[in-house]
Length: 335
Image (cartoon, rainbow, N blue to C red; front, side, top):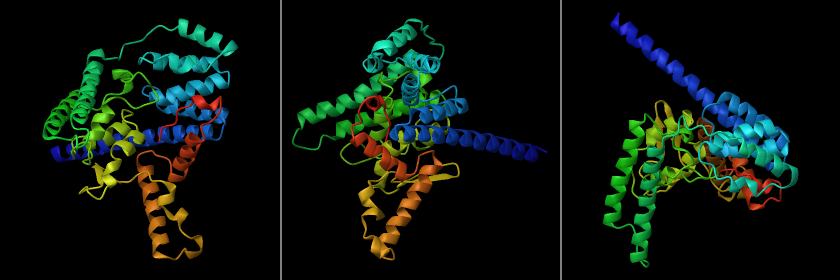
């Protein structure tokens, strides 16, 4: 009887986890489609996709998604939605000067009235936790800055920096595990006060998953990172960037595993590194076939955690490089 109960509990937990993972992937898919619509200068479709994304994940949308959705709503004169998305970010410590500079005339009047009517909701915000994370991040960067200033011609990653790195890593990991997971932005706010960039803690994670002139190899965040993706606490694009150095040949392992999910790095790669730059006349060459298989492998692993295909990634790069004119200069699309 006890064995049967354990089996039933396992099946129930597995079912719930799979449902949660599916929900997360649907959210990221909707956001990816919204961003591609912005790249294609179509804010009407972008707003439609953001509405869909926030219906899937109404409680913990990422600040950058809210930021872009707000601009789409303003451009489409959906001021009711603009207010809703802006208030969510304002409750997280959003810097209003990041948006007001983009508006004038009637839109600015509407925006000013929206801002004046805002009543802060700090019911989930944990100021003490947010301050601790900020201090750890400042310490992390400060140690490197000090070491670099004292060793301008040499490697600033000294033994003392490594020792302090470990203290910072342990402290951050302890904070995360005490709160059950990586905290979402409702809980810690915009730790850099800017929704267009990742929270401060991602720089610490970055320094402790790579080992070349910046930090040391540490697996401590592996499970938390992927778990955070499916709990809307850690964006898959942060994951692709922060853990991306795993693809370096100097690393023993270029994979991260969570439950039955295994993701191999790299997850993003410049277009000139793959088959597109190989002579199209020689599609049977070993080089061409190997490069094409690698792109397919990357796309498959990107899909596992909610990232769009490499083709979309390259479109976003071109959009950013083009330095879009107004009104598209205000949008922020993460790589």
